[in-house]
Image 1 (spheres, rainbow, N blue to C red):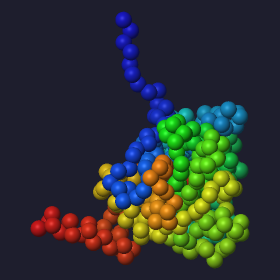
Image 2 (cartoon, helix red, strand yellow):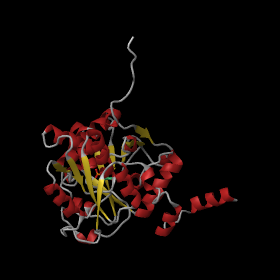
Image 3 (cartoon, rainbow, N blue to C red):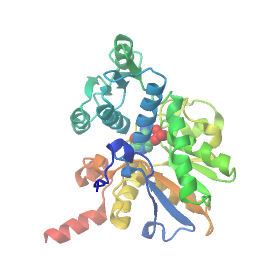
Image 4 (cartoon, rainbow, N blue to C red):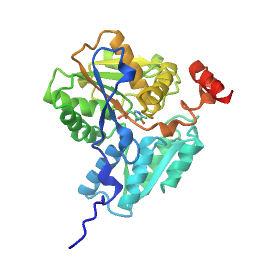
Length: 344
Ligand code: PMP
């Protein structure tokens, strides 16, 4: 008898279909039922696996890409990692033009996944020929058989979530979802998912999360780009200093801004209280949930789904480092006390 081997063909088979996990202790004092869509369960540990696979698949279908060709993007973050991962399995070269602000750990991680990384000066303007935008554009023009992913302006980013994250949440909640809470960077996650959910039930409320120092909330309210909203902040992946064409602002009902400090503490709270070791923007989403709850957004019958975009391991030298927390002035007194007790 032929022996059946129960194996996946490659890690790409494991992209998507992430679990929905009920939040318990962390939301005890809040009215409503809270569920987290934990995107760290993707093989590349973030929601960006979905867009990397979908965009590359579409390019193949259109005949733009064939094995040996090159994928180009400008990010040291999750998208870069996911593109490098998908490129390895499918046999493409992956070139990432990143800012010199990116940590050594991140650059090493991308190189470990076989990507060729160009480190470009952070202090130059976007139209300078040395900027990572210009370098990526030039490499794309010079490299035959290359695809520039351009996630902030690529509609396929939105489509990936419209076709996967949205239907998954609808099915996992048996259509009982009443609120979606998600952060907005490119806006692909929130607006692609929201568009699908609102098509099923227009009453579902879509609550966005933005950073202080980003233009998105103000733009949503006024449809005006206010550059005075822009200043540096620490959360990576949330908010923006430009308006991404990928974001469909019409399907988002409201935005809430969160601070770096409260989001950092909320991230640590999710790990310590719920056992969910997720990234800084997941903490930002959880922080926004508390603020939305304080504004009376939810009641006992609400079924709130929060999207947690990535895994905590990417933030060991940031929110999960006591030294970093101290350097930022986010002194974590509870944690300090516990460490001292153990040492004693
Ligand atoms: N969280 C993290 C950690 C991210 O890297 C991103 C992507 N920039 C987001 C949230 C936001 O997702 P999106 O780009 O789909 O809006």
